[in-house]
Length: 431
Image (cartoon, rainbow, N blue to C red):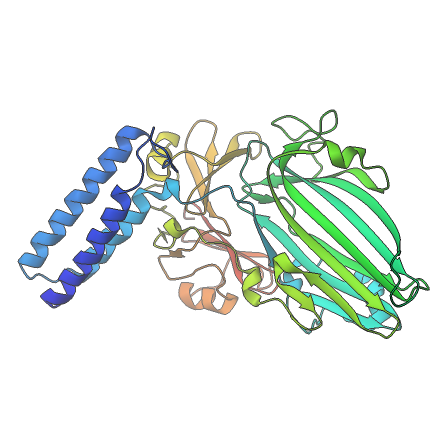
């Protein structure tokens, strides 16, 4: 590598270091990195030593391309604890991945407007109108849902306006309210995404408008849903606190500590015109479909350079050998801890990683979450196809070809969406 190129990369490393040095130390205003003060300063010292070491290599005109890349990448990893925030990321889910296993009931509703839900014209949303009836379907999920309790509350205000004629200034208006609770695990809704579909007719009106205003987040409903643990049956994943009705009492009693809002509006008229709109998800059908990027999860920048070593671990952590203090030193403080069986817990960290740790302290497995942007040592990332996995690992998995996950003897498993793309990677001990 030429000296000029190396010096240019060194300049980029220096600029990155300057940015890091501008971060507030613990105790100062601003977003404080998730690591103890001593280890934070030790990390800065390590960064300075890396830069000095790189400068010496350049001066000797040695080939240092690979080493310099590794050094720059490590700058991000040193501060992984500051990168992932509990921001409640909402995104769409492809219909092919979000549909229930049994679509018979849903298809019966969709057939009224001539729609086949298994073959949508757009991968993220269906909206159609026939004979004065509108049908719509889309799926959403919540990522990065880390808070002080393992559940999310969602409240909905539904407003229906019915116009008898063009220019009607006093439409009949009905307002109803609903409140529901979703169990979370490892930063997402347990059991998969939230399916949204509906079928609305004119009901003899000239024009009809249906608007739903959603708010979802961490919080409580005094007297009904409180505490830092899941307050309902341990085997349940969902609780309907208040079905749609005119009484706003439960709706108004919800107290959020961290939440996101979004909305859905459906309109239809006698002349056959209609619309299905959600500004937050970027669609206004039939004119403007959502961009496919609306289904892409947020990626933690600190995870992009991570490499998962099959049967071994990541960042020097070792399956079966590393202990909880080792994990904290490498990954920082946990974002969330959830019981996983009788003798282990799932502990989530920044970088899109969750570790299954035995109660006696040993690291059992390492799992990725949607925010993971790294790869395995053989180049497989989230979104890879089954064919790409087979090509990379060169042998048949220990499961059926169409199984929801494949495991390999080298110590890695891949979980797939229904459309056949990797959505989770699990490192295990080799067989």
